[in-house]
Amino acid sequence: MADRLELANVISALRTELASAWADGAESAMAFEAGPITIELTTEVQVVDVSGKVSAKFWVLSAEASANHGRTNTQTLTFSITPRLRSAPSESMLIGGSPEPGVTRRAQAGPESSD
Image (cartoon, rainbow, N blue to C red; front, side):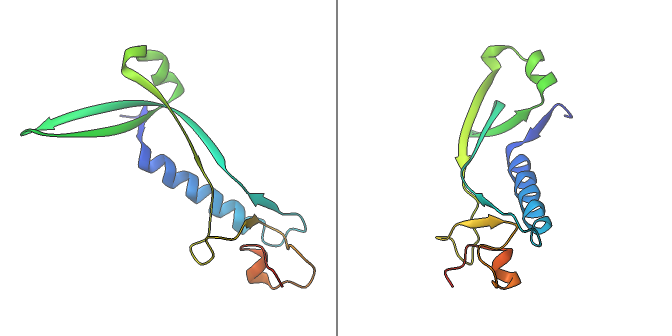
């Protein structure tokens, strides 16, 4: 259905967009610290019962689909995520730029350096 997307695909697309912004800004003199990102989506929960096994599927609705669905069928899902690198999960991540003059390119495109 074109008017709804799987929640996992929406989060995957967000991850791809953040990685693209991170790579695009690697040579920039200015950087942004990646902080918490708050996401609010209109969702529809589809409950499926197959042979006594109940599961749920979360669908993210487009604005047009949200208008067409009754309020009883939709929920607003709000959550926060903070981007981190697997190689340095406890460090702040910069999107582009260098935290200090003379920092290597790897540090420019990654977490803040303590050098």
